[in-house]
Length: 284
Image 1 (cartoon, rainbow, N blue to C red):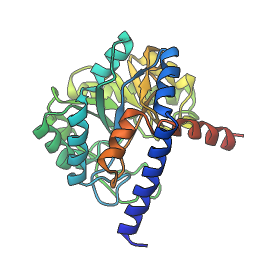
Image 2: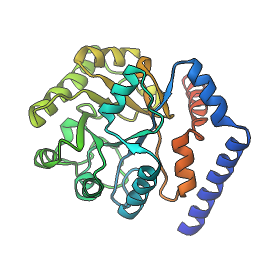
Image 3: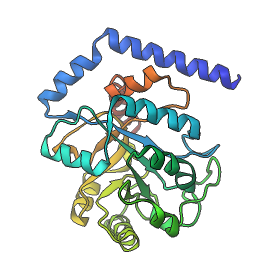
């Protein structure tokens, strides 16, 4: 199967899901239910790698195209601002935050120059044990990628780029003993604050699926002084009650503009239900 065939197949499936959701008025019913629950829309977009072979690889041209589409329809704000707005119960429906996990060096060399040129804020989450090293947390990495060095982290414009913690060792948090959990959340925070000399109050759960963190994890983050945490669970809604369980969305390399806007609008939030079913079936 060729790359073009893969692209056409992915696009066709995405269009089918988008059209079905619109036909069933999924977005409208979702907004009604979430309004009753006190949830507000505030999409958080997630990226990982900008190097060929890397996890969820997005090339520079595609990344720029994504940003142009997003910024053309929404106001891109920093994640700290979006968290403040959710905490205050403010209207966040036209705001979007950008995030990048793992702090690969390709963020510095590929994504950051584009963000700086377009003056779009983003948050990058750093696994502190791997600063200046490689993605050794993966048993079989798609490709070996360097993680940003301390010097590169310091070179990032603090008015544009927020530094967040991605733990120390990039381990799933749910199975850790109390002392190990405290180390992951506290030492990563302290190390980054010593380096950048400003508060680090945002956390991204390593791997980030439902099974990788628990209520005990959230409590540890609160005790350590974090204000919010993001997962890799799908969704575009959040609230002051769910600041430590913020969901995110991501765009595919071949997504059309219509598909990107549909994801931002919440048309793909149905995947959250599928994730819950999968977790229930596999955790027995």
